[in-house]
Image (tube, rainbow, N blue to C red; front, side, top):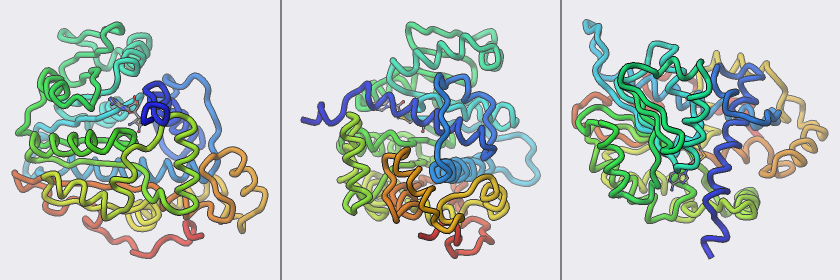
Length: 360
Ligand code: SAH
């Protein structure tokens, strides 16, 4: 039963969708990513609502990641303390290469995914000097067959995340040090796994890394009309959200972490993330890039375009509905005591009001 609702190839294909969506944003000027185009065979133009949603996700991720990278550095220190990033179900994400360009790459960046995906990623890295030159050094190697890229500071490795003993082995093979501050990324990954596997991964991560931030981005609210449609669409493609009923709300996402060993957890939906966490200046900039339905006075034409081109779009409930069905959850373990003010509210001078551009 679970097999027909969810199959490996269909879940892997969601990575191609993610890359195409990122490229659509990059082309419109929402954000910079000099590498994502290398991974997209068929570029697509996403609707303004989807672009803005992707941008919000990216902005929240980069803002929390920047907080992590800055934490524990005192003002009289010049050297960056050793830190590491672990990306679960990384797909074709290019954050490592972006951080290198920005001079912000951590000591170690490890990406894990199914072998089918890591092989394709290894091939793209091997065939593109733009990427290859960034990681090649005396100790580096790329194997498309093994789906592996090994270099001093970046490792790409294949594993089925549901196999915790193997996950443990791979992470240790990658040279991750459990005592170092670690940022764990799981964007649209755990929700596709069965609930026991999702819980086991969250639990393993908490037991393994005592000073860590877990960044989770995924769907919520399967039970209203919009959520129902979202579930039907994904199931019909063979990539059911197997874990959504186990943590269907913001509170349940926080509980997933708190019940599995994490000290602190906070979940916000994307409406709140956009309204209260994404920088006001950035919002001003991107809201000028293209009109979304609300900006245009809920133009019927834009609604119709979205209905045709975006499977999750529900007429009359456009923008707020989509953003209320995705959330960012972060969880913190802080043995070293460096994440005291980490999170959505750190140094926040943002208004707590939801931006009018995001309201229904
Ligand atoms: N995190 C990336 C990709 C999301 S697509 C992004 O946000 O852009 C989901 C990814 O998770 C796919 O690449 C898929 O292959 C991977 N994935 C899903 N289940 C997995 C599993 N059991 N083991 C390893 N990778 C998995």
